[in-house]
Amino acid sequence: MRSRRRSFTQYQVNAKPVIELVKRVNISFSLLALIGLFIVFFGVYKPLVAELKGTIIEKFNWISLLSYNSFEHVIESNIDGAKSLASRTMIKSAVYDYAEKKISLEELIEYTQPRYLDGTSVFNNLIYADRTANDQIIAYHKLDESFDIACYSTHELYNLEAIEYSFCLRGENKFLLIFSPVINEEGIIVYDRLIFDLKEQTGFLNEGVHEVILLNKEDYEVILKEGDLIIEDNLSKTFFYNSHYCQIFFLKENAYFLSQQSDESLMSSVKSIGNRTGILSIVLLVIYIGVIYIYLIRFASKKLNVAEKEKIELKEVADRANVDALTKAGSRRYGVTCLRDAFTAFHRDGHASLIYLFDVDNLKSINDVFGHNAGDLVLQAIAESVNSGLGPKDRLFRWGGDEFVILDKSTKIEEAIEKGSEIIQKIKDIKIEIESEIISSSVSIGISSFEDFDKDYTDVLARADKAMYLSKTQGKGRANIQ
Image (cartoon, rainbow, N blue to C red; front, side):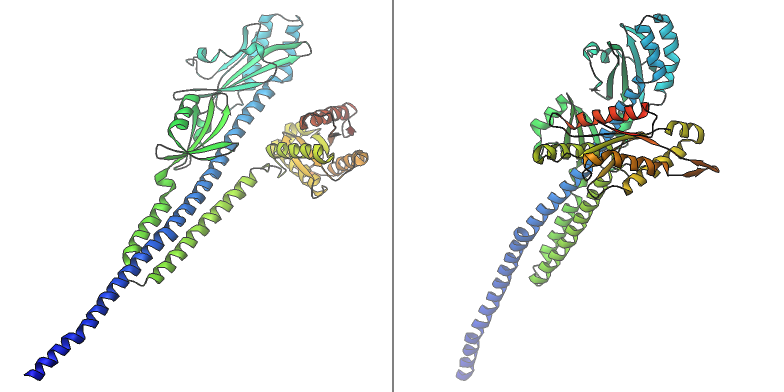
C-alpha cells in the first residue's frame, strides 16, 4: 500500500511539469496569434488599405480629369461655332452695308433672319440665339417659344471687344452663354448672343457610378466649408463630402465643374479586403500564422498590380486625348501646350523654333464636289505626308478645320522657305482616287519664328497667319516668311 501511495504521489508530482508545459504552450500560442494579428493589422492591413485608397483616388482623379477635358472641349467647340457664325461672309456683308447706310434696318432684318436660322441650325443643344444691332434684334433662333431669356440678358454686351462666355447655373437649369461681337475696321457693329443647354452635354459624361455636376459658387463654398480636403493642385481640389469623393475644377467666374463618386462604390474593393482580412484574422487563431501572412501579401500584391495596370491604362487614354482623331496629328490643346513650352525655352536658352501655319487651298471645292468623306481623306493624306518629313523633335498639330501648325525645332530660319516649298511639293504630289477621278490639293504656308519682343506664342502665330494670307494673295501654293 505504501509503495502504491508513493507511486501515486510520484505520478502526481511528475504530471505538474507537463500541465505547466501545456499551459505555457497555450499561452505562447495565444500570444503568438495576438502578435500575428497585431502585425497583420498594423504592418499589412493598414498600409495596404492606405496604398489602395491612394491608388483608387488617383485613378478617380484621372477619370475626373478626362471628364473635365471632354467638357472643356465641348465649350471650345461651341465657342468656335459662335466665331464661325460671326464670320459668315454673306450675313457679315449685309451688316457692313447697314453700317455704311447702304440698306435700311428693315432690309437688314429681312435679309439676315433666314440666313441666320440656316447658320444656327448646325449647333447642337442651342436653345436660343440672336443678333443685335443698335439695340434692335435683327435675327434670332428660338428652339422653344416659351423659353424666357429675361434673366439671361443682363450681360454688358456693349463693353465687349472680343468673344466672351459665361455660365448660368440656377437650379436644374445649366446654360452656357456666349457673347460674340462682329467687328469691322470702324469697330463693333452687331453682337451675337447664343445660349446652349448643358444638361445633355454633361449627361453623356455620367457613366455608371461616376457623376458630373456643374456647381455655382454657393454650392462650391458649402463643399469647401464642410468637406474634408484630400488633394489640392493648381488645377483642382479633391474633397470627401457627404459620403462622396469629389474633384472640383474652376471653370469661369462663379462656375465650377464637379466630378464625384460615392464612397461605397469607389472604395468597394477596400471594404472587400477588410472583410477578407477579418475572416483571415479568425483563421489565424487555428492556422499557422506564417501561411496566412504569406497569403495576405500575395493577395495585396495582386490587388496593387491590378490597380497599377488600370492607372497605366488611364494614362494611355489621357495621352490619346492629345491626338486629333481624324488626322492623327497633335490636337490643338496639345499644340497650345507645346507652343507655350517652346516660347518659354526660347526666353530661357535663346533657341527660336520655326512656326509654319498652313491650310488647304481647295478643300471646300473638294467637299462640295466629292463630299466630306473625300475631304477627310485629303486631310489624312496631308497630315501623313507632312509628318513623314518632320524631325524627331518637330510636331504637327491640327489647329482647326483645314488649318495645321508645324512646330519646327530642327530647321534654321534661312532654310525655312526651302523647307516650306518641299512641304508644298509633297502635298501637290498626293493623288487620291475618288469615283474614278483623281483628286489633288495644294496648301499656302506662312512662316515665322519667336522674337525677343514677343509677349506670347500667339504673336508668332499672328505673323505666320499674315504670311499665309500673303501666300494666298500671290496665287496660293506658295510659302512666305514674316
